[in-house]
Amino acid sequence: MNRRAFLKAIGSATLLPIFPASLPASMNFRRRRPSDAAWPSPSAWKQLDEAVSGNLMQVDFPLAALKTDPAGAAARHLADSLTNPYFIGEQPGLTQTLGWVDAWATQPSVYAVAARTAQDIAEAVNFARENDLRLVIKGGGHSYQGTSNAPDSLLIWTRHMNGIEMHPAFVPQGCEDTLEPQAAVTLGAGTIGMQAYDAITTKGGKYVQGGGCTTVGLAGLVQSGGFGSFSKHYGLAAGSLLEAEVVTADGRISVANACTNPDLFWALKGGGGGSFGVVSRMTLRLHDLPEFFGAANFTVKATSDDAYRRLIREFVSFYREHLFNDHWGEQARLKPDNTLEIKMTSYGLDTEQARKVWQPFLDWVKRSPQAYSLEGWLVISSIPARRWWDVQWWKEHWPEMAFPNQKGNPLIALFDRALTYLQKQPVFALDGRPGAGPNNAWWMGDAGQVAWFLWGYESLWLPASLLETDAQQRLADALFASSRYSGVGLHFNKGLAGAPPEAIAAAQDTAMNPAVLTAFALAIAAHGQGPAYPGIPGHEPSVAEGRQGADRIDRCMSQLRALVPNPGSYVSESNYFEKEWQQSYWGSNHPRLAQIKRKYDPDGLFFVHNGVGSGQWSVDGFTRL
Ligand SMILES: Cc1cc2nc3c(=O)[nH]c(=O)nc-3n(C[C@H](O)[C@H](O)[C@H](O)COP(=O)(O)OP(=O)(O)OC[C@H]3O[C@@H](n4cnc5c(N)ncnc54)[C@H](O)[C@@H]3O)c2cc1C
Image (cartoon, rainbow, N blue to C red; front, side, top):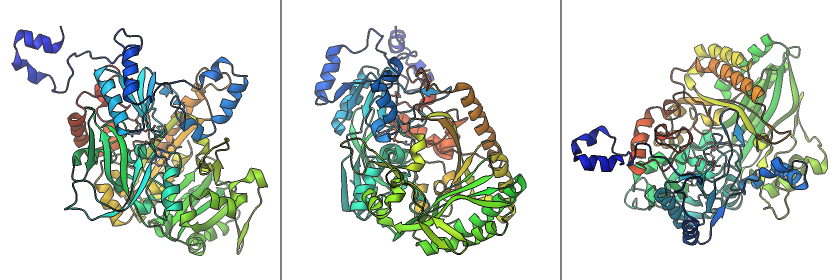
């Protein structure tokens, strides 16, 4: 007898309050797997297929070819393709990260609905709910935590929903009396960064806040908060969300915005993807472009630990004085080999202005040639902002930069006194498959993460108070100490201290951990290895090395965590094994998120690892605890 029948039989309504209202009928509720007798019959699947206009598919696991015939032509072709994020994105049975040592390894769903419409999504949601299936949602497939794959599941795959429509004057539904019309863009749920940038910036001359990585799915990005290279100016991607169309657990297609379902709208802005419903489309505010976007790339190497300590100390104070504003984003990386790598982007500065900013720091480095050397290339350069993601423009203007394999690797010298500014080799990698879209490109800086298998990944918001004069030495010492264990990147665009007030105000009205508002940077340490997957000969993840790598990352970040009273971490770029993740990801916003989860998904249809409400489920999301 199940719990409900039992209660009815004993007529004991008074017992009800001891059971939380949202519990399903059985305390041991377990989702069905294909091995269960109650798994939907072939005719039930056929009905679903008809309901979604033939968009139901069985999901293959492309990596199987590497296991069965690793030396065969198909396997060799596949191994090559695994360096291409567009290829991976087109496989419903793959994810961009292939796994994480001791955590997860990507596995295909049994079936996928390759959704074309919100109605397709609603049919899949209803089918999963009615048949007690494990449901999973995938857009760009970039989750580090493995939250867009699950074995024995039904997948809603939004890749094909990539329509883009710009509006000169958009007003969210129901907000006609309260909000002014504004320029906006509506994106299908499967839109990835480059598709949006091409339509909105290259062709449309406007700006939308997406991610730094061109192949990240924007629905996943927005729901985790979302930072791009220029977020220090424009703020969070979630801060620009005006409206979403969402399929909730009851199968209803709803609108969420500031006036309609405002609680759900708020949760979608940073509460984490895959927890509150399936977003079928989003409308984001458009912004103006500045005249220039630019980059500053160079590496300084110190000859001793002492010199490196001084370099870090100098950089911290230089950052505070000259870079701590909305012009400068992206990263400075500190490494165990005593190098400081600058890989930063600029907003709204021409080349001369940008170089002037850096000159005092470069002069400081230059004054101590026995202690410091500039390694490799030095680039401080700006280009028209509208061309930042314009692949054709890169081809025409600096083919040497974009395509070193075609033209060798010539140096373009931009001379400035004793320093030679060199254009760095390739900026974009291209999808070379026959028939591939001309804008299928990704930054070389992201290439190392395609099909990687993670060893560890941790992040931490660093409060701007650490930049105060009397705290700088402490910060510099901790950065030096952390760099003894692992490379660590300071992502300045992922902390909003120094951003314009409107970007901060928009971020305040999201579910993200408020720590993002007062942080000058998000520190990230991560390690992984190139295409690897368990059971593939010659490409097995190195478990022992992976554990050591994770340990080094933990030690590295512990040095920095010691500086921060309530450590906060970015949900999408964080540790699979994050301790106290509710506090870490959402801080004081978690209780409200938990309440909204109970309202819109009381039975936990939407489950992701360390997502809001996931604590009530087994780690695989199949059994209610
Ligand atoms: C190489 C790389 C670079 C990255 N760079 C950045 C960066 O510059 N800035 C940044 O902020 N983050 C970055 N990230 C993190 C990334 O933004 C997040 O992982 C994001 O959630 C990915 O979205 P996706 O659609 O690509 O991934 P998916 O794995 O498809 O989805 C991520 C999560 O969102 C859910 N989801 C996806 N679509 C929907 C939908 N339509 N409705 C409801 N839930 C959905 C999924 O279920 C999953 O839980 C990067 C990640 C990688 C791997």
